[in-house]
Image (cartoon, rainbow, N blue to C red; front, side, top):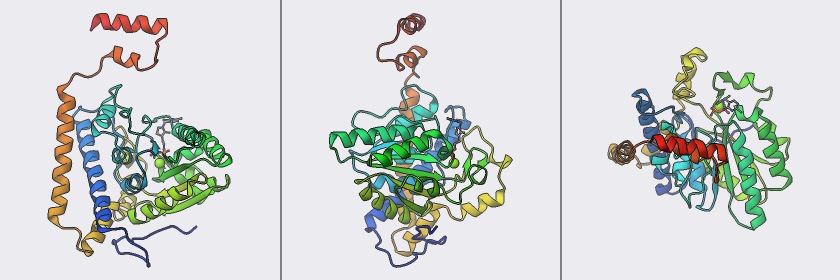
Length: 342
Ligand SMILES: Cc1ncc(C[n+]2csc(CCOP(=O)(O)OP(=O)(O)O)c2C)c(N)n1
Ligand SMILES: [Mg+2]
């Protein structure tokens, strides 16, 4: 199957394509760099014992930034645990993301007015939620699209098939974005499915689809804009072929299941490096631009971390109170007991 590609590995433009404005190009790079810096900082904080567990995004920024850039405020995102670059760009405060990975019960949700569903850990479950949200938008006659992100591994879950089937039958405005990062923890794609691409699985539901180089932000943006338009008439499936440069989570050691030569090959395709080369060749990148992005992101991170670390973490009772709107008697008794010991 032919893959949509705009940039080669050196960041040169392939073919005759309509490039977005300079401002959009610079924003693409700035947002990927911001995401990379936040990711790196959270990883280090976990090693210092200041975070519970982190699922790094590094390597997958292009498809996430491109997706978020095509959305409007009223559109929805149904994310997994590895999608914070996309959700931040859609309005999720950095502070919430850090609180979530610190293990705080109040971190996963978005503030009122930010259309991002809570982070989903149950593999593929967010796809059903996305289909449900899109169904609601359609019933209400709203224009909103819902984008849901998931991995290659998620496409072997029953939820994936149920979500795609329902969305296709009811022609719902949902975009299924599969980030094929080659692994479900330690299981490579070749041991997960017998098809050459993941798109093959979606084709069976008779929906529009795109197959894209997920490390090429220009191609991702092109594909996502097209998907956005098509989603007005029904679901679109996007397979973005990418690679998780870091471990599955901070608890994982990828050296146990993949070769370093493979990692090095993918480092050559790093979406930030390619986009930077592209910008530089057009006179849109220099060291001062890079430093300005870095300074802004560092300040943003320091501020968010300081604010969180200045305030006490949620208590056990806070955690239980989040589970039910009106807690059943037994849970209420536990909450009262815990509050008594605070
Ligand atoms: C229903 C379910 N089964 C198993 C797990 C354990 N688990 C956590 S992440 C993961 C792998 C998911 O791989 P993929 O969908 O490719 O996403 P990636 O982590 O690569 O982004 C598994 C099996 C889970 N969270 N939920
Ligand atoms: Mg994966």
